[in-house]
Length: 220
Image (cartoon, rainbow, N blue to C red; front, side, top):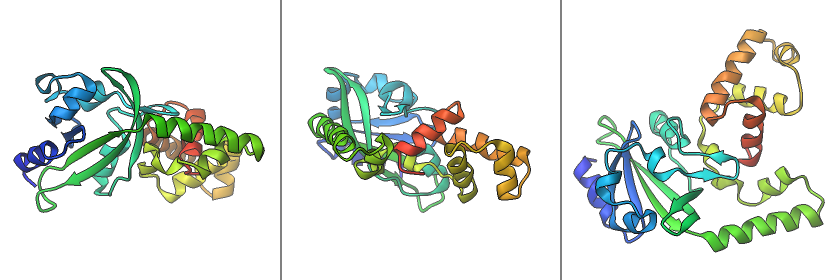
């Protein structure tokens, strides 16, 4: 799909929509996006999307140079719906974000088209239901999140390998690096490499943050 087609597609919906190239620069920004964010097209186009959208979820900032959407573009994988809180002209609001990835015959530049649908009331209700379920059933918070809504967190699109998931699962159980290495029959250095790759893919800076984000996204 050519850039002109991507822009036409973004302009064809009445929902707030914008498109980015594979480097994360905004290449299309429709009128509804201007209304939602309070940012004119001229100020948004050619800017890094993370600086404009500034999306976050329950675990913190999502929009960054290494966001899950860009990872999916590079891996040529589909992206599911995401729930993000974004700053709008009327304050921060939860939006459900659908992401379409287009390519020119699979060989040209990749573009991602983001379509946003504000859902503040629905998201607040979901959070209340989670709290109720966790309280009444005496479930750990991570289990309540796994039951309700975790499939719409951006981290679910992170391209973690099977071995990276295994290492992360053991970390979440409190297993030390040395014991993980012995259990998986690999060296401690290899374990640390897997951990560093996982931190990068989940866009976090510590093991604890990685465990927290993975648990909330239902990856563990």
